[in-house]
Length: 131
Image (cartoon, rainbow, N blue to C red; front, side):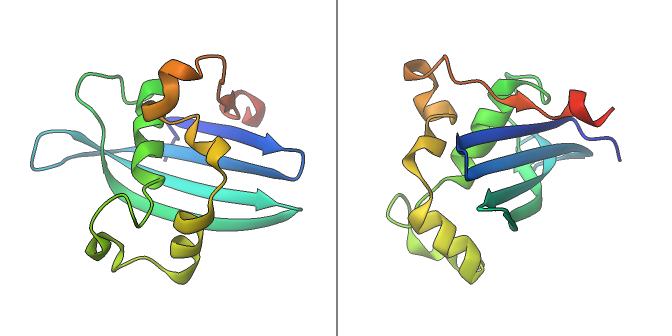
């Protein structure tokens, strides 16, 4: 399946993340288009899959392949245990819980919640590099 987007988010020379999305051609019960996604961490040369899913409901007011869609997905992936009810983390793996509790604050700057304050931060498109 052809990815919609594949981007890199660099925190520092030893730490970066990649986020890749695909169209599922399915809809949520609320009518939102569902996106599949893969979120990985690359730290000190080691690769770690953190999230892999196919049920993110993209906002109906943004294009599914837009930066705004990626920012919304990051908001979803960057929820911390103290942000919402703890039962929402019942299906998380140990690695996902570790990430949720300890991800670097700089990563949040790329999310929708912090975008207005950090408009200079851009995703690095990996799509162009794969051709």
